[in-house]
Length: 217
Image (cartoon, rainbow, N blue to C red; front, side, top):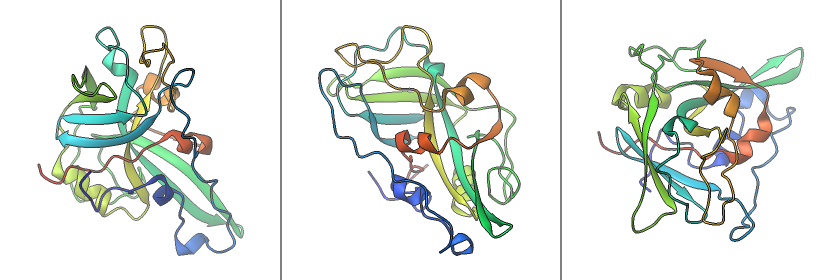
């Protein structure tokens, strides 16, 4: 996968705080290190990349069953911000999500508003498995990711990254070939349709995989 200055590179990038909250503040727990896969184990998201401004390819730990009947909007792309600040001598930590198309500034998802946003939220409109490697699933999105949005992420003063969210919901849903279901990833935000929200659900970090901006637009 091509390197990107916008990408967090690994989950560890989300878990390292700035100097303002070190060394007295505790770090978040490390991400899960679970390599279990195969029969009896659910599929896990292990990687993701933009193959174009409108297509995100996700890599899973094992081949998936056909997704023809799965609602594409079980998935959602968004920006995750890890915000930390010191209050009364202690470190306050929150996670924020915002829509991938939403404008970013210092009060909303942790960037500066150098560039304009759009009122149209990002939606996943189609799913397609790779014919030769069914462990790879492509998500088609609208509107396209823009270079301006990636520049906003790059200049943010907080820890930011593009992530995929998922709500299994009712069947049919994404499963492996043994019928094991893909686990939820912050499903409340997928279902709410909110443009921006915050949470203290740090456990969900264990299931998130940063997705770098494309190298070329």
